[in-house]
Image (cartoon, rainbow, N blue to C red; front, side, top):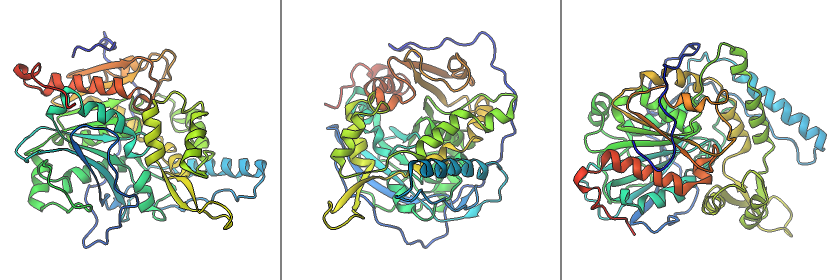
Length: 461
C-alpha cells in the first residue's frame, strides 16, 4: 500500500521470540432472556461533525460468562485522609490489584453486564448495499466518542462514499457502559472478555443490513439461524473493518483471531500487542504497568463544572498535545453531571469522569492477553488485510525494546502494511485525528473503492 506517510520496511528475516502458553477463550454467548434493559445514562446528542450521517446510541448485553471471578473493588481513600495516608492506601490498592490478577486460571462466572455503542449511519441508505461497516474500539480510559473528530473527517472525505455505517464501541467499564454496570464490575478484568464482548455484538446483535431505518435503543437478539450463519460464513450483507487503538487494538485483533470469518480488514492503531520475552517475571511485573496503574488511581475525577475540567486539562502536560476538538468531545462525553454531595450553598451539580480511575487501573493491571495475542498474530487469516498505524514522533515510547515497533508490524507479514503518523505519540487518535482520518481514507479507498471509480468519488461536504 502506497501512502504519503512513512512506513517501516519489511524484515529481512522472520521475527522470533520465546513462546508463551495461550489460553482457549470461553465460549461467546449472551445472557438468557428475558432481561430488564437499563435506560441510556446520557441524553441524545448530535455528532460533532456535519457529514450526512445520523447518530444514535444503543445498549446490548455483554457476554454472559466472564473469564475472571468477581472480586470486590477496594474502597477509595477517605476524603479527610492526609496526603501520606492517601498515598499509602493507593499503593496498597495497586498491590491488591496486581495480586488479584496473578492467576489466569478460571472457570468463569455468570454476570449480566452491558455494552454501549454509538451508531453513525449514512442518510438515505436503503439496506441494499454491502458497503463498509467500520467498528471503532477505544484505548483504555477513553469513551466511545473519543474517535468522533477522526470519524467526522473520515466520513467527510471521499472514502465516506463507501462507508455505510460506523459503530463506536464502549467496553463494560468505560463511559456510559461504566455508568450502567456500576456495582456489578469486578476488581479484576481479563482483556479477552472485551474481545469476546465484541464478538458477542457481531454474532448476536449487529443488525443484518445497514440502512438509515431507526434502530431501537436496546438492540434485539438476532434469530439463531443468522447467528449460526455468521459463525460459519461471516456476514451476508456487511464488510466489517475494525479500527482498534491500544487496548482496543489488542482485543480487536484477538476477536479476529478467534472468529476470522467476520472480518475483511483490521486497522491496529499502536495496539498493546507485545512480543514475549524469556523473563516471565518481567512480563507479569512490568514497572511501567505499575506506573500506569498508580497514575490511574491518583487521577482527579471531579470538578465543579465541565468548564473547570476543561481549564484543568488545558494546563495538564498529559492533555496539552491533544487536538482541541478531541479534548472538547472528551469533556462533553467523558464527563457527566451528578448531584453535589456538598452543602446546599455549593453548586447543585458537579462534573465527574464517567470512567472511574479504579476501573482504568484494573484494565491496566492485566498483563497476559497482550503477549498471548502477539503469540497468535502469525495465525491470523491471511485473507484479512492488516494495517498498522503507529507513532511517528521522535522519541515516542514503544512496546518492547527500542526499534521493536518496526519489527512487530511485520509479525504477520503477508497482506500487511503500516504507516507512521508524524508528530504522534501513542495517543494517535487524540493527538493527530486529521492524519489518522487521512490514512484510514487512503487505506479504505485503495482496498475497497472500484478501480474505475476512485477518482469519481466525491467528498461528503
